[in-house]
Image (tube, rainbow, N blue to C red; front, side, top):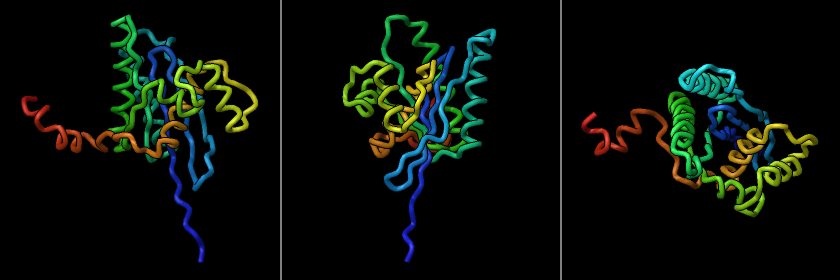
Amino acid sequence: MSRVVKEKIILGLDPGTNIMGYGIIRVRSTEVKVLQFGVFRLSRLANHELKLKEIFDRVLGLLDEYHPDEVALEAPFHGKNVQSMLKLGRAQGVAMSAALFREVPITEYAPRKVKQSVTGNGNASKEQVAKMLMSLFRISEVPRLLDATDALAVAVCHHFQNGQSKSRPRSWEAFVRENQSRVKGL
């Protein structure tokens, strides 16, 4: 009698308006494998609106190519620059919209939680997170832009958390059903 091995693909995203990281892992039983990780370079685009469209299109492309079962995002940290936070929140919202458009569940993780899950230290540096992931997955070269390893860390964090954080609705209709009191007047 053969044993069925359940597979799960997780897309991790590190939202940004100039550089956005992504990491995709496949989990089979206890084996975790990196399928792809990298960055979207957005600074070449003329304005913020074009960057948001590019984020939506590129995230949709990843969703359509890899068909992840779940999406994990790093939540924006609270900074002092309100304009930066607003732009970062928009980037995250657009990435979330792409996942909702494809009805893929979303979970957010605080940066500290991601670092804690991967390194055991919530105050770890980006370099420490990258080195831990390179060791874990036996990848020889640390990427130049650590946004890629940050996104990979979000996917790994989600796997380690076993998806136990509250997931987001799978569709716009589910969101409306679950938030009727918030959307009544719209």
